[in-house]
Image (cartoon, rainbow, N blue to C red; front, side, top):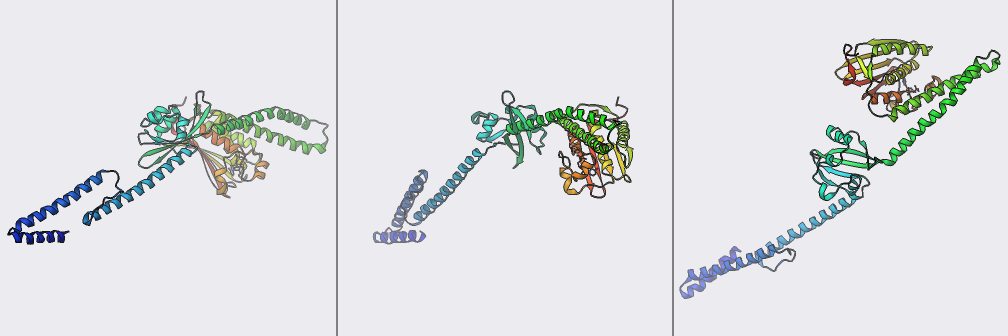
Length: 426
Ligand code: ADP
């Protein structure tokens, strides 16, 4: 380019020399070059203003290179744009196909986007509802509390529909910089099946109770019969033992059904834990013929705001287990103490213990480490399931620490609001 300008200026100067005006002619030549370049620039500008950047105009020299580079850049941009659009379209199609509802929320819980299923399940409208706070649209108090608490480890289940006929599971997951992902799933079918299962267990247990009471009654009568054939005494004794065991299982099933039917937290009364434990200690020793030593360690005079029948059955279960799974030479220590976290009741034994692999499943219904041993000791396999439910109803938890061959500690943790200082407890 510079060489061309120099050449044209020199040619202009040479031509001007013929007429005695070299400077003027060189100036005219340079002005012509400038005009031509400006014209090219104008053409380039006009071309850039059109939206047909892929049709490059003919231009020579430097301008041709510039046009070529711009056209290439444009083609590359178009290619990436098309790819991104295709990806976006696929993403939208796949999220629309997800069988669960998905709602994206900003840190203020305002709706950024939702898929078709979320619109259907939560009756959201894309034109008007984007930008609104989710709790203005999903107004169930449980959901408002869940969102407000900001603890999203577990999903919650809400009743929805005009007459609460539908169950929706709502799970919030945090992502990015404080944004929230709300996943909504219709769990109506599962909830219905669960209700049917609970009702079936409750009804079956209830129906079995009366005939069993009759059988147990007659067995009792027969066992006390003076003219009973001595050969029948053994089998009768065994039948009575099994009838007692069956009654125990049915009572436990009914207790569990009652606990499950009413899942709300219990209000309760002030329970004098020290007094209750003393009574339970006597009962446990009376029930077991080969009980280990049973020590009480009461470190707090505080009472517990609880449902007496429920905590009584939970503590009795833990004491019975400790007595059952500890040899008569062993020791069981029951400790009640309170601290800033709340009230705690630990039942510690130095009995057979439990291997680590069983611990996570121990509170499942009918789960036994050694079914034969549990049956022999008259266990139903429901005791710890009951304890867990009782603790849940009191807003507390059950902690199990155990080492096989060395013993176990079952601790019931109650929240601080359930602890009543002894003087304040009426
Ligand atoms: P069960 O009626 O069989 O005792 P539970 O639900 O009370 O049923 O307990 C479940 C299982 O946990 C028991 O079968 C037993 O194997 C184990 N277990 C419970 N408590 C203890 C304990 N203190 N020591 C050892 N094993 C225990």
